[in-house]
Image (cartoon, rainbow, N blue to C red; front, side):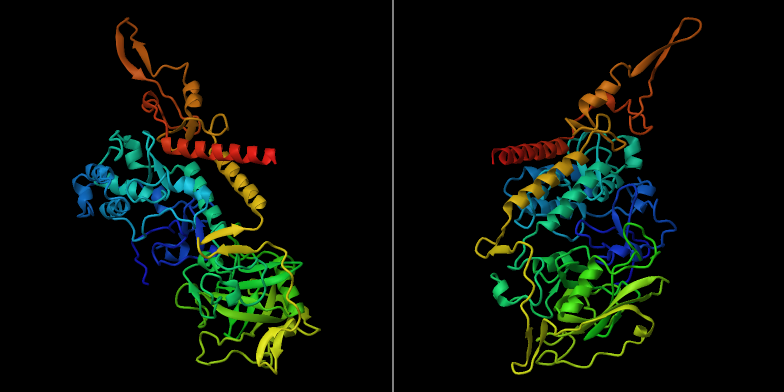
Length: 562
């Protein structure tokens, strides 16, 4: 898809770039330091000159307030607020409410969020209380008005661009400074991001395998479809791929444990040292190039440890490793045209270290395909057969070379004419995901652990929703026009001894016109004198906090009684 040079859009709530409609690699993502929103660097019109203090276009430029410029022809130009309220009050519309809102505001093509079993209970707390009035999604880069209502930045700007300077929910006036320069509610944005990322980790798993399952996923592991995961199966993202067990980590290239082995790898073509020949490829272990934590090139030699050690152990034991390929950064002609594709199992025949293209040692692995199903790029009716290993020239200057000495655990059986386990597969060290195909509910074996994880997440969210004055969980939260959150009592206490206005007198004794005092925000230098007389509680945030607190108290009481 050709990039539109004047169009700048970030990644949406699912991590998909809104320009190219593809989920970027971690090394291609740049986060705005103001709103924490992820942006796809290759889709930016101009490459950023700096990385650590980079600010996105939405946070660095004011809104164009001319209501006649690029005005859409939808009903937003002739009273969206009244139309919105009319839709909300029509109880017969039910699920159509979100779609009609979406059509009015001219939002993205993504359908409104529906409550479903795929979202965990933490995410549901946000999804049921905090949706933007216009698009009915959880706010993307949330803007909170002084009257306590929350909107997507994009939806808010569209509303303002039509000359609407009143809240679409309560008709309260929006401050002029907020109209020209809306500020992201960073606390709320961070909390939503945490809840969203945790919901990914709790999505339903459709196959009955543990996360450290080795080898193919067969029909016995698939109670829903009774077919297993077949070579050529594709998914839109790694998150969906994870639900079918082909590759469990949604944010890592290697699934494995240093003392147990590696179960799967994701081949994205994002590493400059990778070489892909389809039936065999050279894979680079984890390094620091493009790390989301440092955004720097590799600066030291890599050792064979952690995930790299897991790959080496699978090499020594001859375990089958599942391989999925991405469509992004297509340095390989074997990558799928879209999404993520399962390409079968491979064996790691050799591993070593060598100097990479960035001047430091990297870990390298030779993967050779050994699957009973034909590769997606072949028209064969049968799978792979044993063949001589390719000649790897870079082994001449390699160090720490590891080759398998004994018989592999997964090997070709001449009589049965197929690949199979010659030795028993490694025993799992993790609980199995059990799927109820009737109710389509995901039941964990270790429920006690699940509750502990849920309690930890909710406490983490409550810690994030802290007052900027007392540092405790927000009580009756207020959001200032400068997008800072305080307890109502705390903010009132700061200015309790100050008058909003001051009397003035001339030297001759005549009284002059009163003048407003400057009352600076406790967090920044913005003047709050016009905001303080009309303090409005952010009821959405209050509802979320109270719900999380009730859940935490109930879970702690339950654990104390056991």
